[in-house]
Image 1 (cartoon, helix red, strand yellow):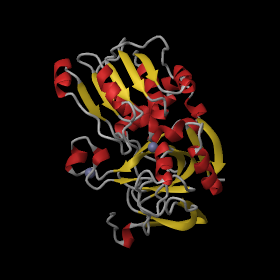
Image 2 (image 1 turned 180 degrees about the vertical axis):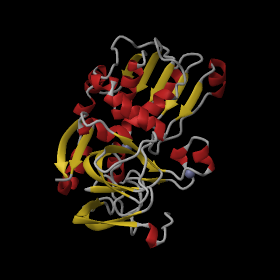
Image 3 (image 1 turned 90 degrees about the horizontal axis):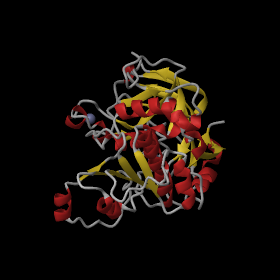
Image 4 (image 1 turned 90 degrees about the vertical axis):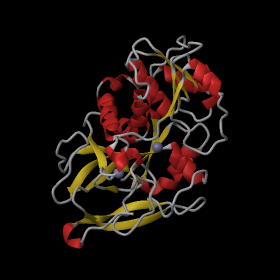
Amino acid sequence: MRTLLPHAELRDVALRPAATARVWLGAGMPLETVAVPGVALASGDVLVAVELSTICGSDVHTVRGDRPSPVPVVLGHESVGRVIALGDGGARTADGGELRVGDRVVWSVTVSCGTCNRCECGLPQKCRTLAKYGHERIEPRWELTGGFATHVHLRRGTAIVRASESLPAAALAPASCATATAWAAVARAGRDLEGVSVRVYGAGLVGLSAAAIAADLGARVSVVDPSAQRRLLAERFGAEPDADDAAPTVVIEASGHAVAEAIASVDVGGTVILVGSVFPAAPVALDAEDLVRRLVTITGVHNYTGTDLVDAVAFLAGRGRAYPFADMVGAVHPLGDADVALAAAAAPGAPLRVGLAPR
Ligand SMILES: [Zn+2]
Ligand SMILES: [Zn+2]
């Protein structure tokens, strides 16, 4: 729970017309529209006007009732927007630059305190007082908490990254979930990937992004997915159809459905990075003797640090332009049709991302 500063330290920003947020109240209920006529920005807070948000698979899981969420909640944690107001004293980007009104930005899914023992040891995504955009019950003075809205109220402790004006919004919106998570997953391999065989399980947006990042680092990447269409798509993200090695050195499990296979397939001395298991599933049996004898490392990745987001956005703006990230967003719906957009994102054969844009 946020500790509110005395009113004198808050900067009131009136919004004309009022900001609107689409609020989810529970499975099977239509989204409600909440008008927010103004916000009170604390020092370090930033108000952003949303350009585009995308609907992540986890939003779909929440709406289906597969994943617990507090309500009422403004869903959406993948957005790109523009700074329209700053709290007193201004705010800084994750890499230390000064933020200005008008900057085009993306921001981390997490808000971290920066001072607890986890933040201090490099785990801000597991801060003791963590808050997450698109995941929090709305509260007075912090209603604009998710991407399904015209505006988002970013709190001090959010990693904010300036985004290139020349990149399509569709490439940038998923940066704060899929791309940064994929960056963190590939980095966890902890080795030079030049010439190394990397297998990715799952050709969702995290898996495809991980494939592109690993391929760009020189890895020979194969992607395993039950869908032939997704496997073909993976080739546009750097996967080599003939790269499959019986025993890859690095395995990134981005589906949540192939954990046992991922662990069984990795080479002696290899590393298995589990990143897709973000929903409840049956436990997986581990053969400890086998892991010991094969010198296997298994590691989990959940969310990412501000540095990962900085690096992911730099990748999208640089060598990542060689991959069709922006094409992964299908139809973009107006915010008023967020229910329609959610249904489209949950439909069989849906594009990897469906967009929502304030009009
Ligand atoms: Zn997400
Ligand atoms: Zn902390």
